[in-house]
Amino acid sequence: MKHIVSRDNPHFKLLKRLCNSGRERRKSGLIILDGMHLLESYAQHIGHLDEVIVSRTGLEHPEIRAFVECVPQDTKVCVLLDGLYADLAQVETPSGIMAIAGCPKTLRDPDVGADAVLLDGVQDPGNLGSIFRTAAAAGVGQVLLSSACAQAWSPKVLRAAMGAHFLLDIFESEDLPTFLAHYQGESIVTSLEAQATYFSLDLRRSIAWIFGNEGQGVRPEVSAHARRQVKIPMPGSTESLNVGAAVAICLFEAVRQRREEFSAAI
Image 1 (spheres, rainbow, N blue to C red):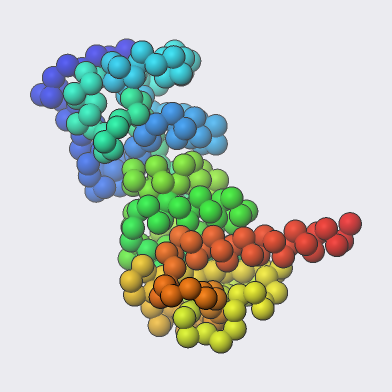
Image 2 (image 1 turned 90 degrees about the vertical axis):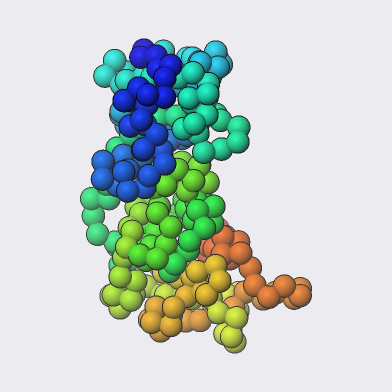
């Protein structure tokens, strides 16, 4: 283990740049994993962690201590004074352990025949992470993001998704209209002006669901490529739903319909 006790330490300065700068992470091809759950998920689904960073207090926690003692010999372990670790952590209550790892690469192109979630300008990291988690839970294997979306692999999005990144193919800065033009299944965008509700649709075939920016919604040049527009009925007085909630409602209606079809088949 390497112990760091000074903010002037060159390696600490490197760690701080990685934690604070999206440009630095993209340049190096690295991501920051904060908390035991993310570290364990990455190790299970992706593999090797480059470096594990723990606070002195964190190292006293039995679960963290056991994890650190079992990391492979080629994984660096760095122990920081609590104050230094707090400088790196981006939450009020630090977890006590984080890691640096290579950003997973999607080795194939988006699948125009499979379920997909398309996000046009979703900018809140919490919303983005929640959507990834919902997509993974609903069995959707790919998410396509326009260039106006938040950075998919930022620490905040990773924390919100709780490991869902490692179960998905994530495509950033995608040309959504081009994907939709070639898509072989149904493509659906939610709209407050639509006449049909999502309850009225047959969702048992492959679907590309399209959701937009928290304030502006889906751009017209993207929604124009959707084959169907539907609304989510809201008998209450609110004007709209959080985009993360809208995604969950739509994806799990498809799950319900497909489960019923499967049950009927047996």
